[in-house]
Image (cartoon, rainbow, N blue to C red; front, side, top):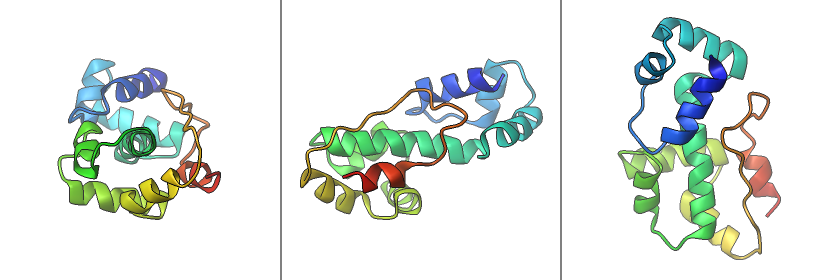
Length: 130
């Protein structure tokens, strides 16, 4: 169940996906999926979606010249302000600072999609390798 949900999020993170969408896709009730998701991953559904989106944003900040607003939209965020707040909460610095610091190092961002259940919010660890 959860593996299918993780795959669905990884494939569709750039869209406006909801818990209800994923539950319908994998034939589970939203309530059951929400509880099972938290139990198995340690994250709420929304936290996981934002985590996947921020991981992709980190990769795009490192590998493209796109501006922050475009990256936010491409990663499924409707608001660049919400994206910046979410990015800062997860990574610890602003997207602009991340891009600037990453550009001062030769670093290749590696990502697995979908993130395995055991893979927790390690964007900070990835950033510290810069």
